Amino acid sequence: MLNTMASTHGTSTHGGSSDWVTERTSISTDSAADRHLWEGGRRYHTYREGRYSLPNDEIEQQREELMHILVMDILDQHLYLAPLPESPMKVMDLATGIGLWAIEMGDRYPDANILGVDLSPIQPTSVPPNVTFQVDDVEDTWVHETDYDFIHMREASGYMRSTPTVIESVIAHLKPGGWFELQEFHWLAEGEDGAINPNVPVNRYMDHMMSAAAAIEGRKIPIVPEIGEIMKQAGFVDIKRRTYRIPYGTWSSDPVMRRRGAVLTLNAELLLPTSDKVLSYVGVTPEQADALYEDCVRMFHDSSVHCFATYYVWYGRKPESPSDTLPGTHR
Image (tube, rainbow, N blue to C red; front, top):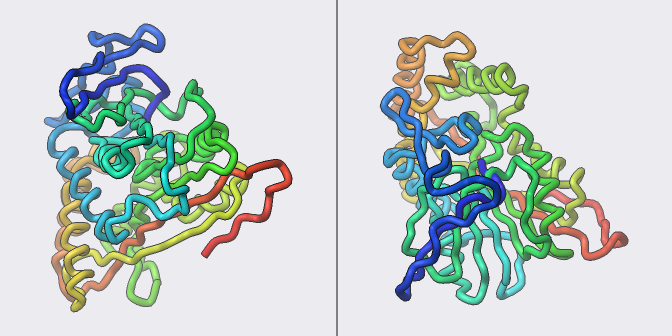
């Protein structure tokens, strides 16, 4: 999760470096944007401290890289599915993390300006010359221009206090006809028949996480199945949905699904231990959390348990004019 224009950094791969930081308010290189908080052996952002619950250390950055590899595999190496014009000129990546998506977009579209925004300054400094990063919080009032061709967000809505508010900011900053795409995992484990067994370890974990989100901030998670309706309420049209079932574990006989399941499992195993603090808000002790994580890992490696996570891709278009308001459609 992010903010709107505090710290900007990037270095051209063609030599020479840009100023690492530009100020929006009083933020500087000595500010909270550039320091980090250590807790329980993990490192966290301090700019808008506590706004995002996951760490930003090397372990988390490795997990983000694994997620990028997995998602690119799921989408057959497509960075997005929205029907963009051949050469989008202005693109924004919300919750950019380590910036891999933004960097690859910059490589693929060298004439476009790509902006990645995140709470943590953990992106590379050697990037394509058309890519910049800013430390910011997209849950605050946006001060960006309002002529973006494409705004992208991946694996972030579940950590936001108000995803609908962020999506309203998105549509306000797209040009007429611009596109928004949100990609995210729905972590609840479904059986092969689509049924959700509440006793499956991953679903017991998710039940605790859902309770914690509601108790801490009144948030509802998972929210990703509802994104289409949220986009429609914000004013988007031509709304489409794609879903991809990915197995937990390597039990599938299909080699592609087995490969994806292996990467998903490793990603989940790295993600689970970051939940201690959140789970403590609903009375889960560290010992109980560890036992739950161990149950999840055993499930991942039990070939008799056939469960799937679901990867969602939602995209929609900002109307060209007030009369361009055909109802959004989901498929």
